[in-house]
View 1: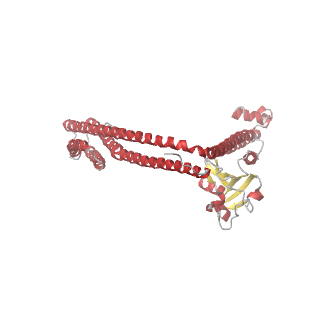
View 2 (view 1 turned 90 degrees about the horizontal axis):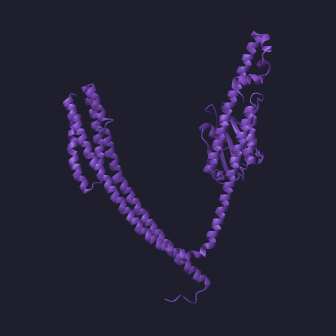
View 3 (view 1 turned 60 degrees about the vertical axis):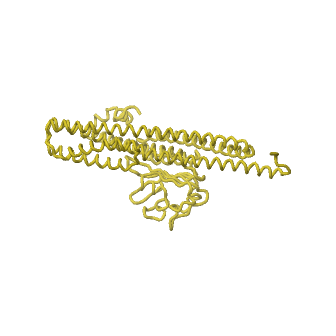
Length: 437
């Protein structure tokens, strides 16, 4: 057949694209058919093979050494007819329920024959368990023999199920191989006609490459912020004795780091005070990104219903909205509207001694900014800050205890305190109580 003549370049391009799309559609239909077929095989393998095996193993486990076997051993050592009867009835009811569920699954002809041999064994075992027999050595020995015989039959059923599972798996593998060969042929034909879309593919690749670079740079900045936060925590912990505002300075440093490293356009730390919330530290253009937001608000105020920091404190989990302008949960009657430029919002709870005492709130100017990687690192940052808050409180408590001890000692032995090096140097007292810092 000769090539079509008299066609314009556009028409030829349309023809090539049409053929390529037809082959792509054929490949898609083949893939859909094969996926549906494999899904059906997998479901059948699970329902008709794995579920029965699980039920049979559960029955076998109930009859095994940890349940019925242990009961028989205990009765042989210390007979108790009432205990044997109650435990036997309980085990019989449990295995009978599992056996009924097993019989409700799909049976193969060979499996039916095995069931016909197993059913009398089970019936005899159930009858013995519920017959209120005295726990004599002969009765226990006979009951144990029936238990072992039943378990052997169950092992045969399990082996049959596993062999059938292997057969079904091999059949599915062969079908998948045949479909893969046909799919490969269609893919090769499609690849030969898809050269015309190379430019589109390259453009998409370039966009994804740039997006990946941006994501990588963002993660680098986040790691940098995490490192700077830990450095600030160590510094503030060292200043905890001499600086009563060490905690406030730590909040301010954290907000500044989050904004300066590019993780937020605005960052704030909100603390809870009874039934009120207060923004105690922030960094960024609050008047432009949070117009009308109060510095302090009640838990039942309209602003609280749209505040992510309030939710994070009350619920004790991080809150995120990567499409803030489209999120109806962030709008409440009487609350300030979210201005343009705020695309994503998140808040992370801060804890002290396991109790939520506040939240770190971040506003970003990009949609979908808080992806799982960013959320994980910010959760880690909030966890580090929570640890620092507890440590600062503990340091202050120890400092107060040391001051109280020195004061008590000064009142009892004035001359001794004045001549004691620890009394002359608070740092020496700290060294003796806490070791080198």
